[in-house]
Length: 236
Ligand code: URA
Image (cartoon, rainbow, N blue to C red; front, side, top):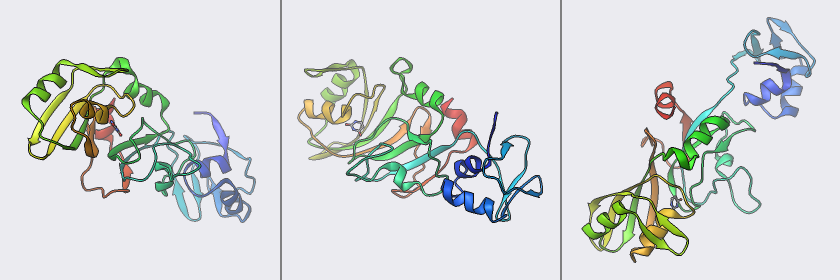
């Protein structure tokens, strides 16, 4: 990895804004290889140099992978003029280059991956890769075997969308049914449109799995954590 400015290094690692970390540096609170460095523009190697800020060793990771249990009411964007975004929820590991991998609607909950690894994001989102995404869905109406068969075949959802084969698993079929739906595409409002098309509007939607990565159900809504090495390997 190339050399980078000391203030950028510290800001990337979430130690503060660029202005805040400059203050740490100017106050002599930052050591590079055990020497105080007071120049924010000083170039460091993320691999070779040992950097200590305010008494704590800082390890540089080029890529961050965060699993968020997205709550309703936040949008899957990096910036929004009206609404709070998923990035506003990330207060630790807060790097300016993070972005959500794909989108969940404002009223959809569940598994959302945030990263700065554009290559992995592309692999997961590319339509050619057919990465399956599983949703827990509550719909208004009784889901039937006919729905299962129709979804399994692929069907004309509406004027613009012909859905690819999708797997529908009924958990409870009653006035308000509970199902798991696995799709390999990610068209705009896809799940809602598929159920709307069979006159069973979605009442609640939560993503529980993406590829082989499952939502950690111990994360409360709005909580997040870094992926483990094992989880990252599942995505690759
Ligand atoms: N399908 C939808 O309709 N909404 C989502 O948020 C995700 C998939």
